[in-house]
Image (cartoon, rainbow, N blue to C red):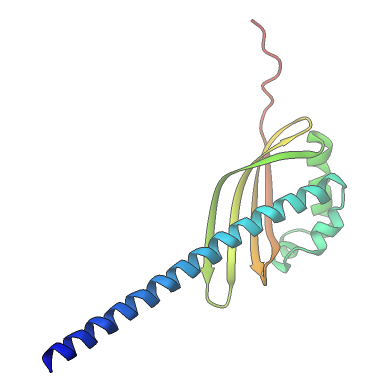
Length: 152
């Protein structure tokens, strides 16, 4: 009988370990998927930015962003960036952070280096992923100085 008990304990330990591994893999896929969804939301943000649909961006943002910015101030901020840099083009992720918490959902912070028509900016986005939908929590853009033409 001791062999049977030992086998049962080993089998139980293996099942617990397998369940933990599956749970970890599923969580990892969920976090990776959240990052990808946030990156897709950046593309959608830039499409609206290029069409100067600042009100749409503001309207679809989270209430926490709306506590920080009035509609007019947010539109003016985006309009200023657009007038200085032109349309957004290629954006490359330079860093990210994914936070998952019970009851708060998943938040994804992205640092993007974005090429615009007339320069480059480092953009920082914070998104909350809700039911596979990304909601903007925060946005900031730092315009990089232009190197200008080089003389030899």
